[in-house]
Image (cartoon, rainbow, N blue to C red; front, side, top):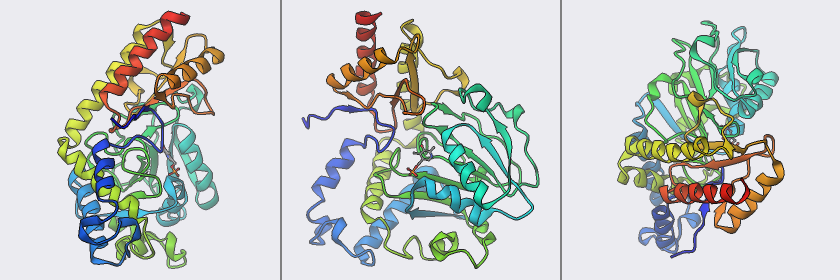
Length: 363
Ligand SMILES: *Cc1c(COP(=O)(O)O)cnc(C)c1O
């Protein structure tokens, strides 16, 4: 009815239609305030209500314990690559890094400017086609913290079991799989995620931090880069990304209406199974990722023989058929379908049907 196409973008990505409809309906006059959320003061009582809805929504959906703060910041997950070590690194206690691809590499570059670190595990030798097995990880019990990316958006891998880091805080970049399944937040020191994949629109970064860890930072840190600033001011030290926070409130309410994270996880498993099965079943395609490490969010696949011209044709014909953004990341090539929470089963079914017809034509 809106002529919407199926959007497989890795981010910014598809949002739930009921969320967009509600935002549309409330756009001109939000709850009789006489204005849109975009136009109102962040210090107004109306906006404070929206902020509380977003925070409480996240707390309910993810079951976030009280000793954690939920922050709505800016600067993307990319700023967190620097902000985490600025706040959590303790000199003489190198950070343990679990290196699984492009996004941990970017975190390593920032670490190199701020802290000492060591690689507690890396799958670079396997071209990041899997995440480390738990028995390959060499953790230092005296590390400042352990950094990982729970889902590798570009490589198409995901951690399905998390390492136990004991008393060492585990910091997870969950940008591309947050809210895709229930997780035990109490196992993490910090969880951060750019909103634009599974939480809401671009422009907000969610940081979930165990509050005691924010006490590590020295007073010399710039005010905006200190987590304590944002905890004490409830994400309102400066003007927060108000529109994005509003959308997050709506997405949380949508998730609850859909049955919460267990229901979403089941649906995500079904969608991923349908797509991986279509890839594995057809000799025309293959998935470069080791089976146990396959991501339920970003499905990376190739045409056999890695024929780049044929893959370009795949992308062009899929686009013409209303299946958008299937090109793999420019750094790795190939094809990628991002099937976040808001991707309907109908989108995955349409992709699978297209794949089978394309293989018939060119196989
Ligand atoms: C997209 C992504 C990022 C980068 O997020 P920005 O908000 O653009 O800074 C970082 N990590 C992962 C795992 C991502 O998927």
